Image 1 (cartoon, helix red, strand yellow):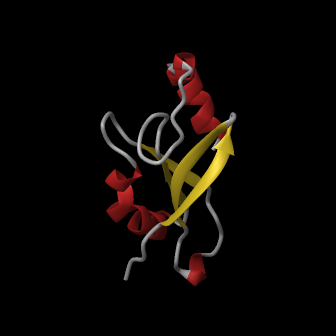
Image 2: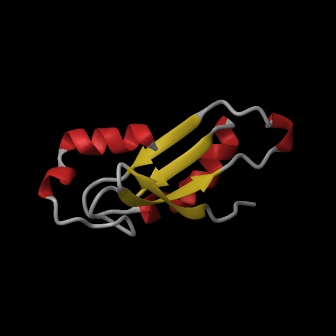
Length: 96
């Protein structure tokens, strides 16, 4: 059985970012092996990953995080065009 990922918000680099988090359900594999970060493509959102977050977490024994990139989904929009640059996207992913 798979459960829905947990939808959350966090402030990263001064921007309110929406993300979904799945945690492995198997108690026997409780050791955390890290976090896998899934990044969606253009015109998508965290919804793109919903069906695979929990199965991936259970298979890998890793937390699996998918977030809405700047300007997508529920992540805060900003009028500062420079924040949408590649470098800022990289920093945002690393901070998460």
